[in-house]
Amino acid sequence: MKISELADRLGLILYGGSSGIDKDAEGGYCSDLLSDVMGHAHANQVWITVQTHKNVIAVASLKELAAVIIVQGLEPAPEVIVQSEAENIPLLGTSESAFEIAGKIYSILK
Amino acid sequence: MFFEYSIEGGNFAQAGSTSSQVKKNLKQLNVDGSVIKRTVVALYEAEVNIVAHAFRGTIIVEIMEDKIHILLNDEGPGIPDIGKAMEIGFSTASPEVREMGFGAGMGLSNMKNNSDELHISSKVGQGTRVEITNYFQAKPVSLQ
Ligand SMILES: Nc1ncnc2c1ncn2[C@@H]1O[C@H](COP(=O)(O)OP(=O)(O)O)[C@@H](O)[C@H]1O
Ligand SMILES: [Mg+2]
Image (cartoon, rainbow over all chains, first blue to last red; front, side, top):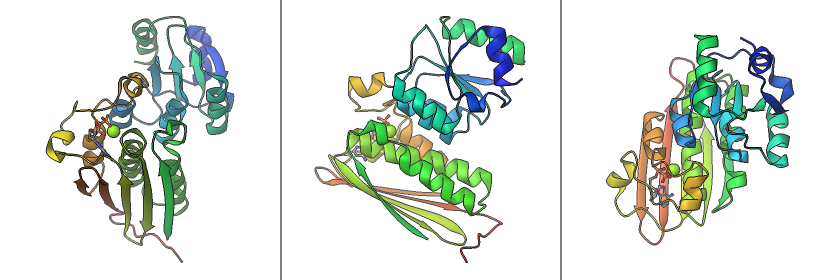
């Protein structure tokens, strides 16, 4: 499913990286540890996290992830949004917890 | 092909920029995607370790027809027990660094799992030297 459609269905906020929303999400990975994502996430997955800093976009871009979803209503700083635009990584947000949003995404994509 | 980068300790905003540059170069050379993926993970972790644990360092990347060789040298505290540092979960990262999601103690094992050859040597009080080699397997690249 396209990131744009997933974002619509889940009511996600789009902070930046809109040029990447036509990419297809192939599953997801839930972690707040960057090395865990580097070691275990796969390309085209959606990354669910509480981390909001610039390195999140660097990791997402290096791993060719489909999008980043920031949970718990946390907001990225302006420079992180700029970075998501530059790297074409959709940066999304939700007020829900990682558990809730991961559950919904799982049931949509499985 | 030969590239040299310098890395500043503590500069997390810059962390990953060398990896991203090297990834672009390997893509341009049409290196096999799975080799690029592995190289990027190993290099990113090594680069972040200089930022997180050392004062400054240099990264020398050499791309040959059949392999990429990366040499990272830093000035820093060094690693007293490399065997222990390799264990998943071992980390001396500060609480602030951990809060950012670094310092999971998985970096060195990611480096090991994503390089064909990994050599680490270190002198306590001086610095650390990391050497990563990944082979392009069946498909040599053309460097003209
Ligand atoms: N370049 C380095 N200089 C000094 N110490 C290092 C270096 N690289 C790794 N270490 C030591 O090895 C430990 C484990 O490294 P790593 O597996 O990457 O985990 P992390 O970086 O998350 O702590 C570090 O916490 C640190 O004590
Ligand atoms: Mg590390």
